[in-house]
Length: 319
Length: 319
Image (cartoon, rainbow over all chains, first blue to last red; front, side):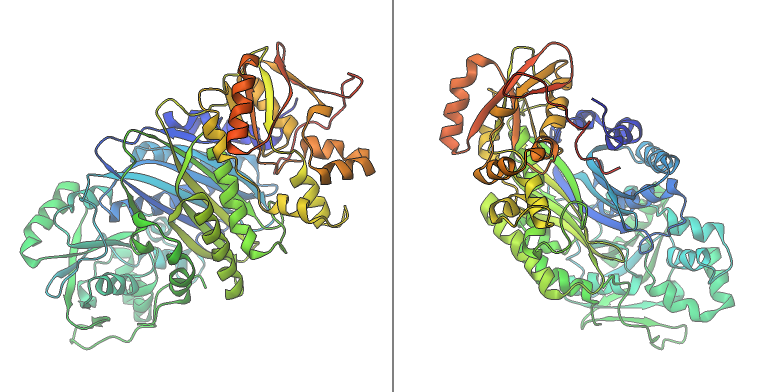
């Protein structure tokens, strides 16, 4: 009996990515011995071509972006990667070379981040390419970073630089000049796994910035029953973002609220600042204090003169 | 700050479905204490409107179908449901009432099958509705049913009835007269969880029938390094399928290879037939012996006269 091409596709492109529990992707499900003495951390995200990535993004970066977005959720909980399951809906007629490149990108990230695929499903779609990934991680019992926990008086910190992903999208769609750094930041988020682990027991609350700094800071503040005030000048920007902003100050709301950052945002007791700086140095991930949590609610962003900056409500929403 | 509608949608429709580890769907990930002394069983499936379900299927059955397809994978491994993560890509402008019905269907199935949602993601798509679900289950160490293990001389068994889902699709698309039984079998598979558990230690190999009986039997035979011969007359049919076939014998290939059955297909030592029949009776799921595994390879379906029936190669493939 000739097997239909779906099976051949899985065998050629995805089976080489499979980890030990995946049973060579040949059973109905994967079998996994849960790591002894650890809690499981589980997250799932979906991406649609034209919504979460560009239809002309290189196939090699698309699966990696989805994997990294999920790894960023693990980082936000202080978790270690364990494995993942992925479903892919490729448009009918997707060239085999594109699927090969998609899988090769995943293979590179599996090696970089130390995890393997456990299972999934491959279907065809008459619509845009759509991918979904469920990630599994582990954390010592009770050690997970949570969103809830920020208190008035805590300092607000963020890792890396903010706004690169949102500006990268503008650069890739012709609304800003081409910029390889910004484009890469849009296509390949950098999940801050080492920093997330290092912040266990230090950060009072944490999350990753996916929907825009201001909106996500609002989530972190609300979960702690407080508000937050940050200073625009304290928000860490890459040289590329700084140059873009110098040329067009109207980009500031896009930087603050554009999303696609996948940096860690966290609250900490001011007395813990030295421990945070030491953790940052130890794992090579820069961090910056951007403001404070306080009583009340909502997020205020202050300009250099200490005046609130007006921002469009909310970050990205898909509805 | 006003939250965008995506958050409101999740809060209204999906948060009520969340289990204890889901942290109210308010963190970046779920936290789960793995059940002590058990292995985890993990599977993921995706469904696209117009490919895996009909665009005019009732919203209340669509999420349930995806959940049940995944539960069927657990059944095939002899596993118990533990929880699931789901990503939903609804077309922009999907009526809120449809999403409410979608979630209400899931709530009903969560109660019926004893599991809760652990996490997920909700996005909008310019294309067809697309859903992905990752299911978690548990099984005692070493007890999982596997695809590999059928031996020449083993009998081939199947649960329930075959062909209803494929005929249901024909009935729902006007190629057969309307039939409520067949339509329901297409829309709401019946995962054979109790039977799967009861077959632990009895079945030598098992899988669920999702891509058509003949193709999936081919998988089971190949995984055991053997072939299989079954008798068409022994394949269990519902009264509705029997009536349809009596009216049009050309439906036989559709019944044998059409897919969407979600019954259990398994191999067992002939000496274990009494134990299988007892397990079937105990869990109220009918089973039927349909043939035997043998040396060689491939699947042969014999007619009442003992002559091989010609079948189209393969089952459903999405590519």
